[in-house]
Length: 216
Figure 1 (tube, helix red, strand yellow):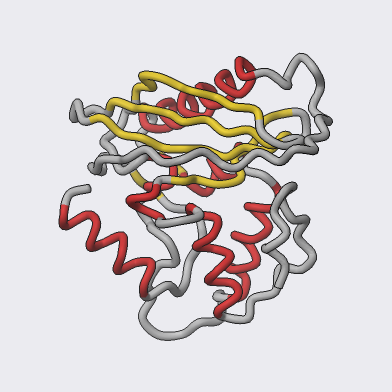
Figure 2 (cartoon, one colour):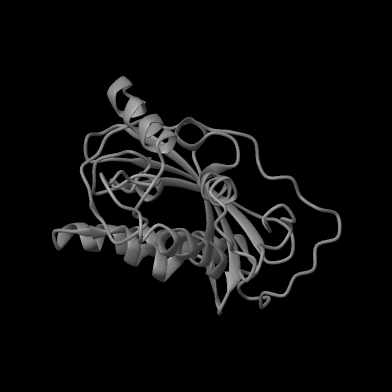
């Protein structure tokens, strides 16, 4: 990551308050890094249809996500909130919305929870993004992972690991994991920690499979 960009990311996470909502983004720069894969449980129970329980299906969904992002970019605006609505799990969306609702009444100067630039999709790079490689792995039950390497419009290379769950007939993103940007546990853990620290209840949100640490 460029020094100025990393400082901005750390600042936005440190002062976390207000606005997990619709935002515009694009033309941002940064570099990513690789990391170890999610642990695989021994007792996986596959409930996704056989034809979709394949690495090819996971890869196809990841390409669909970034085709959609690039299509938005061509039309002048990348709407991160809309991308999340289309491609993220109900747990991720429920947690996001619980935080947003709890912060609606916050007064005073507004600072952002997370990041208004949408680096969780962009891997900190300039758009359009070109996928160079995808390495997909099927994990526990309805969970999968895709390690994606990108090339941005500035010719820099980037990396993002997406954790996905099978829901409503498609693979949907549960977590964005780019260690240099989000630290251990990825973007989902940032939201979970924020909710816990600020007493924001999300008990009614179904926990992702294989994760028993979410409920407060």
